[in-house]
Amino acid sequence: MAPPSFSITLEEHALFPSLRGKTAFYDAIWKVFPEAKLAAEDHSSGRISDLDNGHVSYQIISHMPGMNSDDPDSYRKANDEMADAIKKHPTRIGGFAALPMAHPDKAAAELERAVQELGFFGALIDSHLADGTHYDAERFWPVFETAERLNVPIYIHPAPYSDSFVKERYSGNYPAGVTLGLSTGAWGWHEDVGLHILKLFSAGLFNRFPNLKIIIGHMGEMLPMMIDRVQNLRIFSPKLGQSSFGDVWDRNIWVTSSGIFSVRTLEMLLKITKKDRVMYSIDTPFNKSVEGWNYLQELAQKSSLSQEELDDFAFGNARNLFKLDVALKKF
Picture 1 (tube, rainbow, N blue to C red):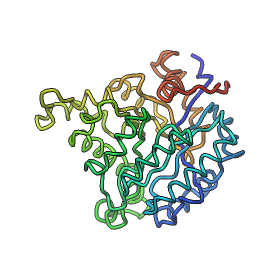
Picture 2: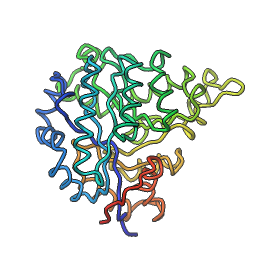
Picture 3: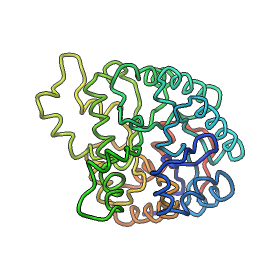
């Protein structure tokens, strides 16, 4: 089977001047991935070259997670900077807004502006505030109400924990680098987003906003293997007229692969999730697009997906979700 001739990716981060706070977390990350910082700062020729090398037709970029600025104006300025970068390559790059979630009403207003005036496809937000607060409290829900009304998705992405929480929860009889890995991409980040989705469900967010679209990455942030368990626990039994978690998963949740280049993990996800809800992503700048292209070729050779299913995963499902009407570059 031939690998796809097109692809769309959507968990792809970038750094812009107005939203790039200096943090201990990123100081450590850039020491491990110095080339990633340079890639995140490149919104032009280097990024387009990476897309071409990886056979990426179109990329939706987002701001680096975990910047946690308390100044709503910094988000507005950063979104404007992103919009300026997109204008230079409108057939190859689109955008997700960053939102000041510590100020929910201003975040909702910025989402509206970014979609209506800047042409963004929605927003990518940190999974929690700097103090670890999730968004199940109703004071955050103007953001979700706005997203439902505008018919755009909210991508909930992992964010760094405080140093004290990392030390208490993840440190142990192993090197500091292992602690960092456990608290981020090896476990903690995914555990946190999965928990957050369950908290939003339990708080009734999806009953209040039944047409809300939420995207999560990393093959479902641990939730796919737990859906049946959640469904079978009586405390999560839906009240009359309300949705079960399985209903919410099928109706409100989209999932990206975002840097997990595993054939068997994708096939497991597709056994649990509707095929039109699963989308391809790279996780730029921590992976290069060519790694994703190698993965698509492996899927063409080794997976059980049909040609149509592989094409939908690579670009079709994203194109439909975002109603993308640009002519995709063919490879």
